Length: 411
Image 1 (tube, rainbow, N blue to C red):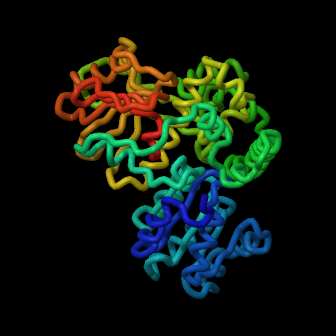
Image 2: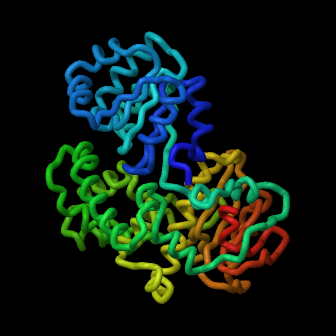
Image 3: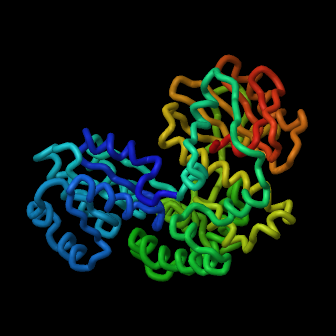
């Protein structure tokens, strides 16, 4: 693992070459500050962090004056602590639109604030840094999405997957600091402290509400329902919140990148489709902590295995989307008749590929029911369908349908 060279680094460098403002955002502790400092040192740009109270005070008291006192391109860390600063950046950029002038990092999605988003439209490029991908951990160059949409046959050069080792990797997760901790107990202590810090700082910075005592319980409930539809009315009743308050809390968890709401795909194919989003956690290490499971009991807990593996695959697809040459959007698919596909990737020209996830060592033909239904409905738009499983063979189930070992995702 390289803490300073990440798969999104070329994308950041390219954005800095022609955009005046580049925002590197993502969950706290994914390595944004480390990466921004590395880029700053290489480019001789000054680095400021708003975790420094003096800098935060200067920015909040006179954002325009702070910018006028800068000399050359700068990196500014943790801008979510003073979102109003982005309005001053907008004014500065309108006067001097120098490429690469501002490299910003943020642990909360300040662009979800309408006034901020509107003011920086056309001036900013946003790049999300997520926890380490499986390929970043193993040193592999992930090209799964590009291969999925190519016309070339799948080829797998890696070794047979060791299920126990994979589960250990999945439940450790991809946060850089967690990857350095040797014991399960230290990792659990890290996640406990992480959630506490995040709720006390980033969530409160966004919400301006003290306490938010229901958020930890909500996060645990979301974890228990990961990779499934989140019934808002039922969840609100369980926690004792109004429907509107729950929606606001869910939006806060999304804004600090703790959860991901995956939309349904409904590509006008003439069927009654389920359109509610599915909910996922941003990291399977965090998911394992919230569920209270480790590798040993995950191997035995069949009811948990499927959702955890599905959450892992969603994360890997989300990460790879940001650097793949093939541009795609990610969805899930379910008809009112319960035909379902775990993930749909769609290109801008309308081609689609379906991905099913199975936690077993064998694949039966009925695993392709949803994919075959989609292939028949979508016609020429359907490019390929795969079932990811724990076996070690690439097995064709049709011209466009294949069972693939799960490590095809990153090898």
